[in-house]
Length: 120
Length: 110
Image (cartoon, rainbow over all chains, first blue to last red):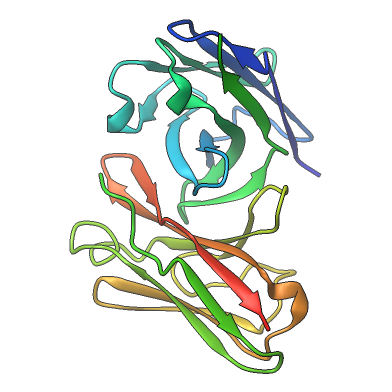
């Protein structure tokens, strides 16, 4: 059974960089059939597509985040990561990592989510 | 990249059928048959219910069905049950390796 687990600081100061890692177990991140993605959800609000990465390192992100977001992959550790720079309170959210099936464009496995609060 | 439009709330009584809508544009929902639907209970991660507009993964009740007409995708839940009370989100591929979610619909079972 595939499992994804987010990890990282739960509190980040304004203007600093948010860093999260998703560890994948029970399957290989190097499969050609999937992208690996981040979705965030501000408290009490809806889901926001943040970005995805392929095992080769090709990544794509939400244009609204401009150049603040970086998604990377470490196939040796079966992990992928999210970095979001210059954070503000608006970046406070539950961040989910999930697997995206390329052929059908849907997220079939999700992590439990981790709350990141931006506050001084 | 604007969020897909979903009604904020929908309600129904047990046993009824309800339909949740997800409206996009000719550039997203209308162009691709790649809409997926997710159910999210409070404090939980989303669970995928429908993919490619109308396909149901194994393990999801056949009370859930999806369809699309033009720029609007729909999720129909028949024989409404108390456990169906949750938030529902649609998601569509919009090209250039990007996706967009809808704003979500809160389903209340009366």
